[in-house]
Amino acid sequence: MYMFLPFLTAFIGLVLAWFGKRLAALIVLAFTVGILIYWFRFHATTHLNISL
Image (cartoon, rainbow, N blue to C red):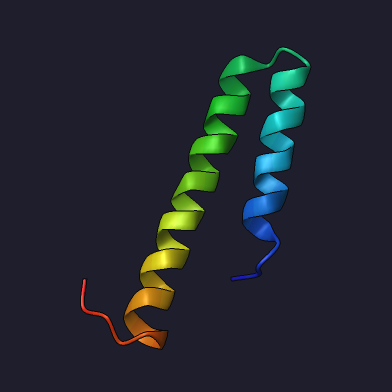
């Protein structure tokens, strides 16, 4: 997973919220949180050898 992807989706969600697209912004920001959770679990379990 690319490192910029969560930042890009968070920025897109912020732009959508700025233009009043509240539901679309919430969906994109939920997708961002999902990426961050997956990213943390992948790196914490494989690269840091922590069992979650």
